[in-house]
Image (cartoon, rainbow, N blue to C red; front, top):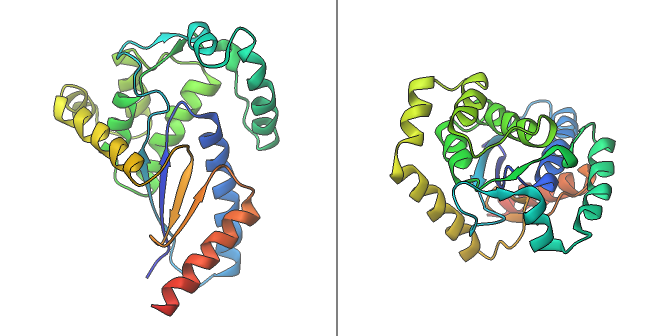
Length: 217
């Protein structure tokens, strides 16, 4: 059976983007160590850092003041440096609007788990943190998802479906019910959980623990 990885994440979480890069490094080493194993089955699952934000979001500076106080922007300098160390050029100063991420999550959920879904996740991370695209605007969401490979008609239909938003909200609540309080949150083979954007070697250790647990069943 292939390795399964469930990743609970939010597209507006910089540590989730960093965690994605570190997971990719861990999986590169995993492939080297296990050349005969099939590729892992990866599924991205939704979480909202800010579930109470309105659908139209709020100005970024207002969000930072509310969450961190008047000097809250300084918190992101360290995050930007860690991201740069992982090859990510995140422009926090260029973000103008803090979005509600339910719509973006609904489009990620539209994609098939695996490479297709990974492309959509990467596209949203890059759009928000690197290109500073406003994720509260419908056309922007459509453009990002379509450029990542999703059919335009399906994307538009998903954004017009209130039930899709409720499914995402339900998945978010399910994650909280499991005890998830922060993201990224990784679950390997449904046996071993790892919270946070850990270094690749720590992720690899968790993978090995999950595989050992599976062998004992």
